[in-house]
Length: 171
Ligand SMILES: [Ca+2]
Ligand SMILES: [Ca+2]
Image 1: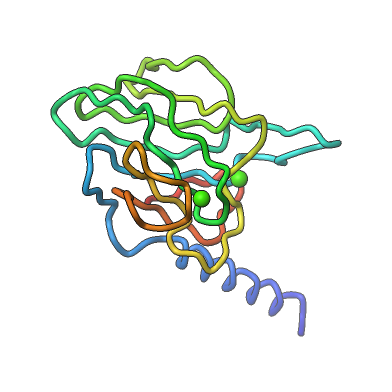
Image 2: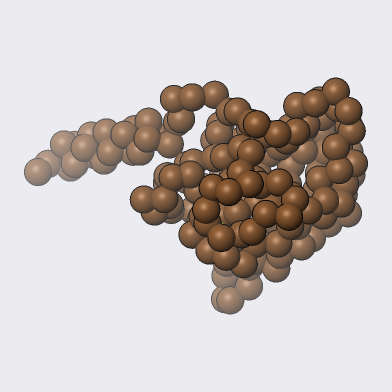
């Protein structure tokens, strides 16, 4: 195969992956919070010499779809390939507001564009960059639910297959 043909084939494969990663349905929820977007693969290298880098560059995005303030405390993000998930911290998300839920440490706040930032406190990346056959890759469950990779308690989901570096996907 010539270099040009190989390059074209590679470009086609990348396009196919992008197509796979684009869900055909709009985000939805049966509860107060909705997963709307996700950035599973933080921009740049995830680690160097054993040190985790840009962990807060990995996040998912939620929206309060109700007309009242919702406290995010206790909601369970269940990554469907592991069972070490921690519940969301307590944070009062106003009616209709959106929030980045960052993987690592920080002080929760509302930014100048009105979007909120919530921090989960992990020292390392937790969302898979390259997914498995699991679908969805992430569920958000009602408080009190188990991180058991099952659907019980789930209100909203996100699936991304293979996530490109520094790329945000719609759920
Ligand atoms: Ca899990
Ligand atoms: Ca990741």
